[in-house]
Amino acid sequence: MAERKPLISGNWKMHHNHFEAIQMVQSLSYQLSSDDYDACDVSVHPPFTNLRSIQTVLESDHIPITLGAQHCHEEQKGAYTGEISPGMLEKLNVGLVIVGHSERREIFGESNSQVNSKVKAIFKHGMTPILCVGETIEEREEGEAERKVQKQLEEGLHGIGRERIASMVVAYEPIWAIGTGVTATPDDAQDMCAKVRQCIKFIAGKDASESVRIQYGGSVKPINAAELMNQADIDGALVGGAALEAESFARIIQYRLQ
Image (cartoon, rainbow, N blue to C red; front, side):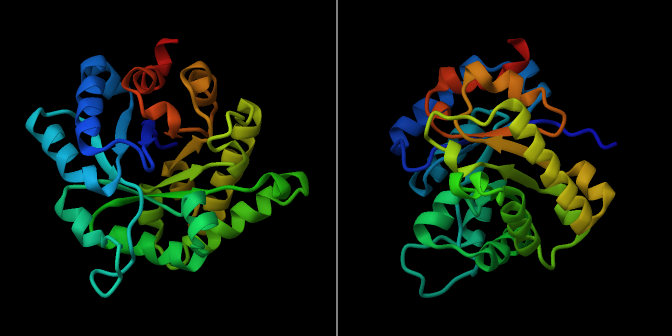
């Protein structure tokens, strides 16, 4: 079985101006050691207006944190007011791009087909997608959670090669747990992440399913990070609110010490 190094990602959403972002990353770096970076990969995903500032800090101070983006358009260029192309992110040395986050799907109406196009575009420009999947509370209560996630994976990964699927990240984020303070129990999170891995096996084969990293997202906090991360099929966390402060995010990254 392939060894999967955990990935802890901080999704800042629409928070922090570039001054606050610089301060946050510098403070975070002071709290992390080489042992922390050896134990897991770390990425931060600030708003677009902060990317260049954070890139400069990470590179000039030699901080081993991956610069990530929250979203991108699938086209390289064009008349798409307000959008950012994957090529623009590539030039900023962005390494990871979140795609298909539930807020993009639910608020902005992104379809599985659009998500698929974005995944392909992200790969084309040498970056790695973090593909988000997850169900609403209504879908869970109706027993439709697994079907919903399977459909998101099948359509989101359509036409993508096995080696690329093996190299990417999938984030299981139950919509009912995002920003609500409600977290899936470790058993529930493990059960759905295991189903995600089974679906990847069906789509891309055993090797890909054993290599792909699966994050859990949804009200991850320092107090519950270790229990979630110790589950067999959870290879990291996509963290929202708790990633906005250096101290709480550092404690999540250091979950192994708890």
